[in-house]
Image (cartoon, rainbow over all chains, first blue to last red; front, side):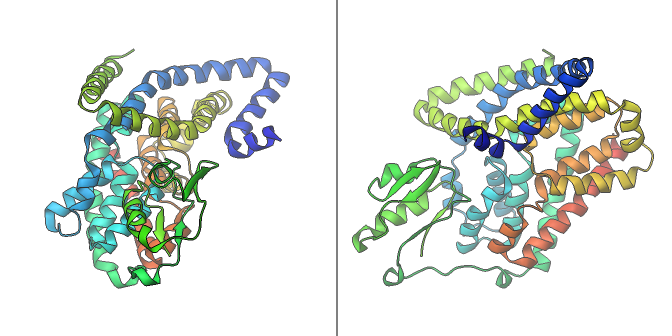
Length: 241
Length: 160
């Protein structure tokens, strides 16, 4: 059963593994050649991986993301654009991890242009990834692509802000205290960091690397606590419902 | 190790030590989060690295050069951009993969198109984006990203 689960979560790896087994049985010389061909890239990867790992970790520490997020709503113009760009570039994770964060910023009054800047920068501009790109494709390649991408992001963000109006974006309204019926955790965004469990162990637990509600009944006097967790959740996966 | 890698190690090492001195607890905490992210990707990373070997063994360089080389550049660029749009692999492993293609003679133009749409255009995550931001926003952003990816790629071809 465990093997099935492994295959399911590692489809690509399992496929490649089977291909190699098949190859070793039918054409061993080709199999050896394939491993040899891969070796160069594996060694290069091992050389750069610790760098990427450490860079990803320390960018989070060095940049006061919470401060950026807090002062976001009222910033506009060029300053807001630059702030958005910085926010997107320093955040880790795939583009969909940016959706809940952007949703929250929209609620706080961020403009469409800034949201597109955050999403795009989040997707393509990453310091650790730039190091990786320079390693495999050269410094010149990396820097030219970086410059062209930055320009494109700003032009694109402007075009989207002209075409799409804020009214077309669904925004759930802020609930009044008496309207709150419970807590909603959107699992697809949860990164399983365990912060909610640490702050309110009576209500949250981590199961299968995702936050789960232990206790669905929330008391009115604890709403303040929940508000704090909703603010603190790094993936912005928790909300009132 | 080449000069670039060594200098990256030196810069990163220095930054890491400063970070530890500045805030040890927070540094270790975010290393834990980064470790979790790496764990999720490691399967794909190993798979792609070994896949590169298979590709280089079974697809002759002349074929790669012929399909992704200087001839029919526009078509191969658009197709690469399409492939990048629907693929969902970490950008992290895309660089060695693309690097291996360029090493055997593929043009950088389709390479750039693939790399850019891979991260900026998300066909697989489109339903999620639509749900959060509405159809108009999601469609406009993804289409524009696709167009700009091709433009960036063609410009790179001219500049480099």
